[in-house]
Image (tube, rainbow, N blue to C red):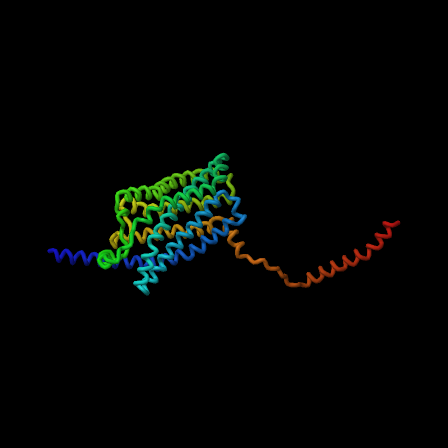
Length: 356
């Protein structure tokens, strides 16, 4: 009986491993580079546009600038994961060593960037709600403190995400063969990562990172839509279009971040320390977060006329316009020359008249 159960477990683990490798191949090697490379180009263009003077008249520009910077960091981090997988496909030993070196740092960068992006998106919604409610005092307070709010969010996220970097540890060389046979990974959960303190910390972190922002964003998004429908006639076209694009971005954030937060909070799902089936689910949920970081440029470009015009100005070349010479142009030039000659002939007569 024991041998049969062991065989069935081996068959199940092999099927789960094949499923995980297929999901990792589709999402990690193909879809993530396809999403990350255009997303990086789009976010870099967003940074350039938000620095220019044409977009500085909008109060939301500071928040969107920092959000584009964090999305660029997030996409670069995810693209590095795909590069490691590509290297691992050609040279497995070197790829595992590279994965071993980079995983803990990339995990920390991913946590910090997602936490910053969540709260920056929340403050974008708060700022847009204040603008739609037409409260001048709150509007001035948000405008004056927008950059300070962004810096505080980044510093708070860097500090709050520090315990994440101590969740995993490198497997010692003496036990690496045994560990690789069990989990097929040279990284394992540390004592701190398996403690109750870290479990409480991860619950609080998931609530702060996604649950609270998602609930508040859902409420603010509905209020913004209601206020925008009321002030549609009085609002300007640029303000209306930018608000619509921000409503779509907030909706995409809720759809992409909330499932990942539920997996972490309710099911307590990590990545390295989990089974192949759970790791396959985590690959899919992480891909949607990556997609959310890459989609903002398309939303801005398709809806906001001011943003689209600013992008097109970056690629315009200031060239001299040459028009073909026609018969009418030649006659017009001859008439202009005759008028100039007549004025030159009349100048001496006018001078004599003035002297007289």
